[in-house]
Length: 330
Image: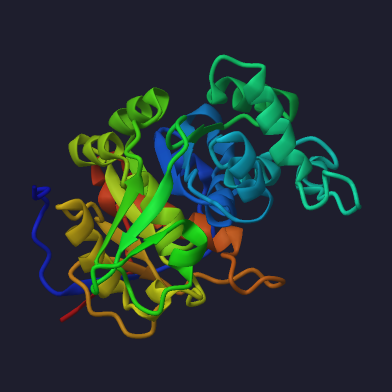
């Protein structure tokens, strides 16, 4: 299965400038896909889009407080969903409340209050998505957060030596990239997520752990199919700092090639990357600043500028102003 797209000779680097008027994106429907910290950063940057912005969150985490809940209650992973909500919440102290971690000798030791809230609301609701929507309303989160699936599943990696590695924690600790990554068991995508993907103008992947944040939603067969069939353009946001996993040693092009090998088609139309050495056939936006306090997180103004420029380039028919800083490097 090969997704048809225009041929690009050589590669182009689009240098980001200061933040553009948010109005440039107001007419677009955007779906952001990934895990907690990275996806939360993208969604908080684009939160002004309100219901035109949807986040599809990886639900395969099996470590920490999330892992404890999953082990005893066979639920989806709530941690990344809670992390996104904490970055989007408009209520005072909401972030502190959602991220509060119990530290005592009780049975709650190590558990996270936000995870417990989401788990409890799920138990009282017909579907996990109902509990997420209820907490979103209470916290005045105006964007929609959706799990990639409402059925519990885990990551499964197949290694070159025919061994298998089960679960996010162990997969992130591998010494080399797995031959194949899949879900165990296979699950269906959230219907609302599939609908929004089909109607989107832009789809954003990352930043975050390539194997355990970006990849899990793409391994849901009907999510991959919806991306393949969607007219939306797809942007990949690479991490500012190499991650501590096998993917951290890969170049941007190697990541794209590995992604295409897994999915059977190449979904990426443009990348946002500060990598010093670029050898790729797709346009790349560079020079995106990091946050002053956390160098591994994107500065929100710079990230917004990069996404605006990407939209100008990928959707010229929706463009209000031309991009003037494209340099063709061959």
